[in-house]
Image 1 (cartoon, helix red, strand yellow):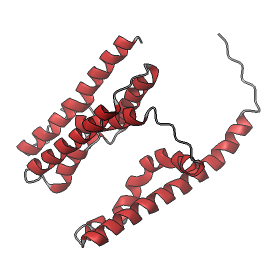
Image 2 (tube, rainbow, N blue to C red):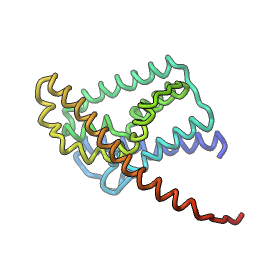
Image 3 (cartoon, rainbow, N blue to C red):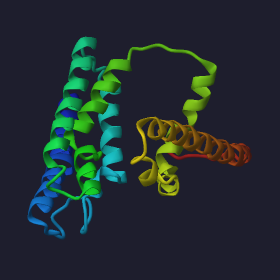
Length: 213
């Protein structure tokens, strides 16, 4: 696709899988109805952006930035990021009494929220030119995708609802311990996975495969 075609596709995908779905969730909350089939993600729900559909949407945005060398002013990215954060915070305060607490957090903090997508975009554009080399951090960063895939499995088992109502120090300590523990487990899972797949791929690479043009 040309740059113009790629941009048009991204705008269409954002409308269909972001703006439309956030509208569906807000409408469901206000009307206390389910609206089965109205979401473009699934018959029951938008899944609040926690699906392969929205993951691929973010991937395509990143691909557009990389392929077409998109850059924005550093200060503009910082202001844009914190402006989105402020709007999300105000939105959260306004709707917290209109929806159940968990559903409200999924709406304003969901990955289908255009403001959350904009935050990710500003963060990527802020660091896209940032050159950083550190062996430890580069090694640990290999587990980021693993963490994304499996962190939801650990969260219900960490008694977050118990510690979030405790003192601020205990809550912060629990958050930090939870983050560290989940990432360590994710890193371990990542290393086990790569241990076996590296050996499998090395064995497969011994066989020469011919392709026809």
